[in-house]
Image (tube, rainbow, N blue to C red):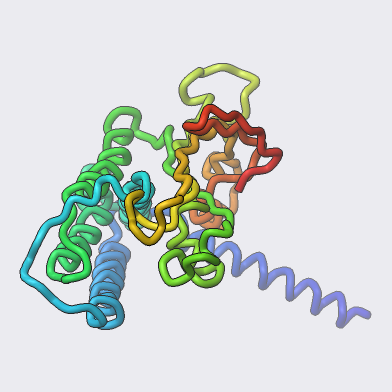
Length: 299
């Protein structure tokens, strides 16, 4: 039994030591750490380059190339695709800023080089679209990309924190079964392609605005936008004329996971990653058909 006690004590000590080392590693540097900064720059540059090369070889190579052209797709998908651009730019900017903060980079440089990560990457993708016969460079996509970056940078300059988060939620719909080639075949594809099941949220921290006691620091109020009934991007598609395309507006509660107090850097990192997803809550839905619907739990 004494060997068992010794083994348990050794195991617990090893776990605590590992957690301590991990917490130390995840803790943001108080001053500029050159090795961390270089690791961040090299990693992000490499991942962005590999992603663009992969897109070029695995996606764009399947479609004819063309001279650079622009398109106007502002009316497609009831603007759900544009909100996808806002979301991507915002979240990539948040990632870029947080990784530079971990490396001890100054706040000015975090905003200058980190928050623009999403805008820079998505601009490169948009240029690739411009040279594809299938698509084209979209100025409205670029405006959405800039809006996502602006939402992040503007809050940092105004409040020195993110009081309003841009979040995402998803539920499966029957529309993907009707057009799996366009809306996705299986959950992993539908999660990205089926705009009917996507909802984009502005999640505002209540206590940051009201400054009142009695409200949990992590409680948010969320305003969402979604759409339904879409089998094609445009409503006048001759193959699908009977689409009941509906705009949907949502009111719900949410949780800002970053504001949950914990001494574990690992948990803080996990919460930060999961915080891009809106937490399911009872939700009120308003749509442009004049209907109001209560969802007991909405994903």
